[in-house]
Length: 121
Image (cartoon, rainbow, N blue to C red; front, side, top):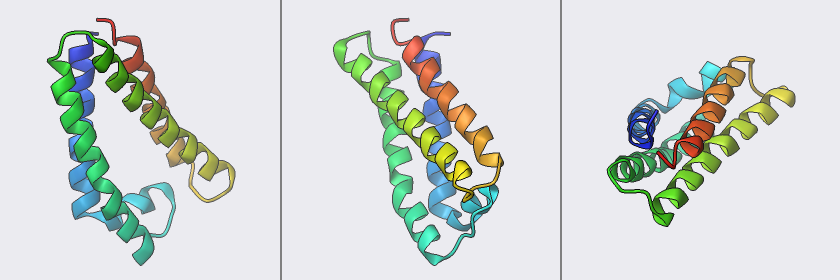
């Protein structure tokens, strides 16, 4: 897999997450067994633009030649995805989230590792 393809796939995923989280914040948390109270919906909607930003940066980076800046983008997004996975795993271990969070965490780890692994391609 090339960096361009991985970055574009993740850009689309981030774009979709932005829309879902911004427009339907009450649907996200229950997927992982967490009640979508007012505070959760507020924070979900407030955090959604982060995914829009990553979508734009990844789409632009996909077309860029390899450079220190593109490697930094790959590292930043990889760390983001892996850190999100860690928070999900911790929530599961603390009994806050349902086992479905582990599926999301696996995807997030995979996304971060793939993006980092293909950064040279």
